[in-house]
Length: 309
Image 1 (cartoon, one colour):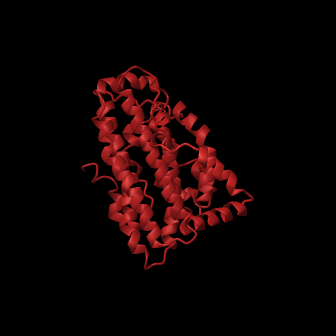
Image 2: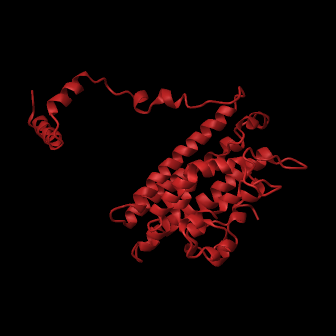
Image 3: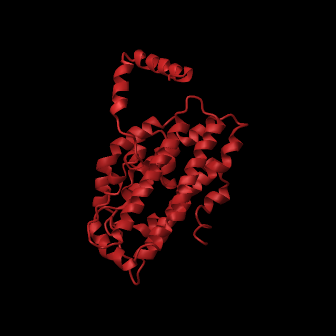
């Protein structure tokens, strides 16, 4: 029996498909023969479980791969949340808070789960399989750089002493000077590592496009565009966001590097040749998305308290 409720839905479906020049009857025929959706098909489980392709037979390499894949999925969710803030038709404090809470939750999970990398792999196994990964490196996470670009004025991603000379320069000139471009240089010569050369070849074009798209609507500017009376509502969340991405997250990487690469009398080099001892500690980079939210003392001591100093 066709109830009035079902009849109404059929009418609405006819209107929907007619508006696109389509025949509802044809779609109903397809529905009759379509299989029921399953969980494993919906999330592409078989594909997901076959996305790990270790380069060695060493068991713990799978931990390394899967953890980084999970990380990239969280980065994708973060970029989606940033998009909803920065390109909202009408941005409100409620939209800002909702998406910031999501992002902070993603990064809290990542930060707290990093013990999988710090303590969850056998050190000897890691030191065996790591050489098969050359010159790949976690440094090459394009999505993390995209999060940075979307978060703040591009000049804030340049080391402080270089910023004055970049005022009024083009986005490309500023992007050519961002802090991480000195993070994968050879320690002895200062030349770009193959890791950095690969990364620049793949991503510098898309990064410039993204920087152009977010130049007038990045997270920092969106905060400033909120009415003054609404800004305090998102202040604490923005500061947590800044700390999560620029202090807590790189600090976990530093702890992991110390766990696996610190060795007397000389530290082991990272797979990508990254000068990790100088590049990873947040107190050395002092990259801050929202400097206007912090006191001079907090900026001066950026990352130091978290480092136990």
